[in-house]
Length: 313
Image (cartoon, rainbow, N blue to C red; front, side, top):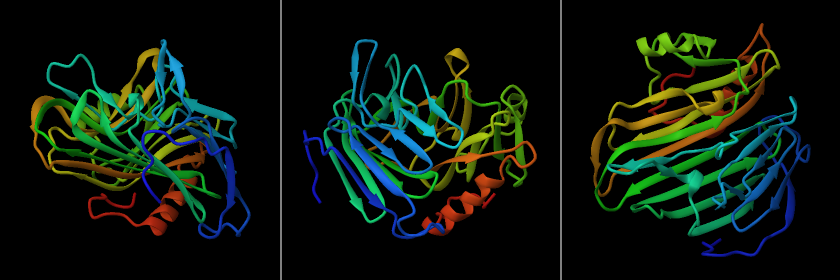
């Protein structure tokens, strides 16, 4: 296994069957991988299709290898963000910059490798954003056969000091697909509200940056999408929390603010790391989070959780 930079040949399609785990019989599902371009892939199992392919938007080539759309087969819905990539962080913004940059607009990707290990497909990138040569970025997806989730790991390593006004990870941004949002309070109590109703609750008590889970749901159509936090580390934080935000055209997104609201210097050696499972699930009005919590338990049993994880539910 080796790094491939800057170009690899398209590998076409390959498939491999699940060998173990999560109660699925060996060979019950096959993970299918299509190489669409240099770093772009489409990954399919029995639950979803994940699209990491390139596109041209506003006359600009976008070939970051970052998740741009996710199709939930059970509900027939394709989650995406029309204006940009669905998966949108880690990202950061230096003092004086007009906007932030991150993995969604990372082009070109300097180092790339992908491989299969048994039931797992691994897609890994590393390098530097053109506007931020001071910070090394590493990002890795892991996809599996027979389960409705995938893993994402990222790490930002500061190699030269700089002053930033924003630094985030764990960000998913989508169009108007959802009716409700759910999250755990500091006392362990579950909150579930419409997006409008969330605002006074979160003004009173923001969601902790190390919250163990969060989910968006469409209770009318019976589907949901959320995260299970497995690990989160930051050597420096300013006003950290998990934000739930409104985007243009009534889009909705969540993100972890690591540094926000104040210009802050990050130093050589600072690291910002995450390891997260993203889960598609079915929901009902009577039991909106039952399937999600079932998968949360399986994920935590399979991969473990760090000491930074704040309670099981």
